[in-house]
Amino acid sequence: MNQDVLLMTPGPVNLDSEILLAGAQPLRHHRTNDFAPLYADCVARLKRLFKTKHHLFLTHSSGTGGMETAIANLFHPGEKVLTVETGAFGERFTQIAKAFRLEAVPLKYPWGHGAKVEDIERMLKQHPDIKGVTVTFNETSTGVHNKLEPIGKLLHDRGVLFITDGVSGIGALPFDMDGWHVDCAISASQKGFLAPPGVGMVALSERAWAKVQKVECHGFYYDLKHYKKNQDLAIPSFPWTPAISVMFSLAAALERIEKKGIDRVCAHYAKLADGLRAALGALGLEIFTQPDVRSNVLTVINAPAGIHPSKIVREIRDSYGVLIAGGQGEITDKVFRITTIGTIGEKEVIATVGLLELALQKLGYLKELGKGVTATLQSFAKAG
Ligand SMILES: Cc1ncc(COP(=O)(O)O)c(C=O)c1O
Image 1: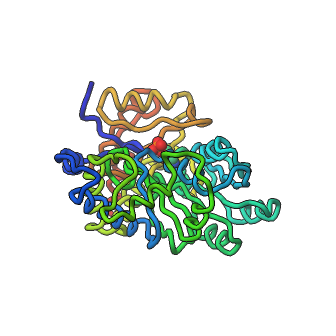
Image 2: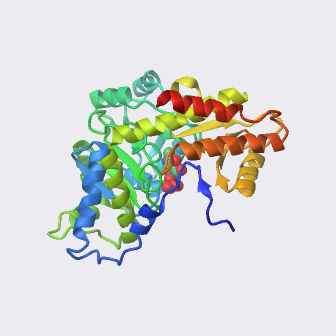
Image 3: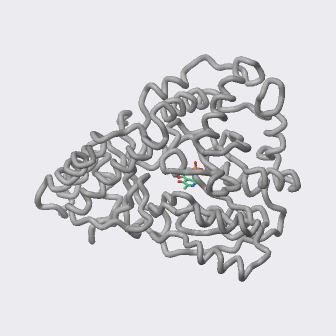
């Protein structure tokens, strides 16, 4: 097996050895003062990157564990939650809400389209007993970047809890939890935070924390009251054994992001995404996602007629050692996805575009090579 596959997938993302090797330190016991500074460092940095001054807990799970934690702690059984579905991860929130015996009311959009605040407002009128709304910040299955700020304002004014799945968006796209009135934001270590998988994050506003205290959590492991109690100890800790090694890598990655500055990190990804999109236009490939909501985290591309996307993914991986992603859910047979986040830069995007051209030539779609790479180079040159 090729151990050196370049990950151009939307999580886990490509990581460099400096971040990975940061995890290879001797362990520090999580009930001691040796560990406490690492914990405090991760939480403080994450709060700054989420832009919140309130509560943030690490769940030691993947992103789905964070989503489950939010639902299990924020709602009583039977409470009504509006689950906005702009793709597979929006649907996941509906499934989790149902699993915890809430009444989930899905608001479904055609895949590739973004959520609209007017539709949410209409649903709130139809269902005045809605207690919370879930929205995916960056829908990784469709490449939709949902605009949260107007939704946050609406829900804040109505006293409805606003929960966002920020798993692939936070750390890569501009985000302002407190400024946008987000009550609960969820993320995970392996995407925008440039670390290996294993640490989930759940941040809560004061309003959300007040609700957590009233709800009898539907589970034990993810009951945030345990997490809060342990976080407030003289030696802050976790109720259970944390993913200590992942936290070392996470701390190193967060330090790097903060050193560069989150605005510059987001601008870097925007430049990479523009470079990729320029190539697609030049190659006559269509972007699946509607123009007004296209994400800089990843680009979802329609496979040319007659070529199954899995053939493109396989050819680039097997022949050249670069992994892009296939489609998910209802668009599995239609699209492939290329990410533009991770510890990557211009050279990885240029290489991926070139290899995509080679693969598409082999598969009979392209006659002439080089148009895509040229467009990417021009886009990068223009951006400076
Ligand atoms: C937007 C979004 N939400 C949730 C998840 C689920 O995260 P995990 O696979 O870490 O459980 C993902 C993973 O791809 C995601 O992209």
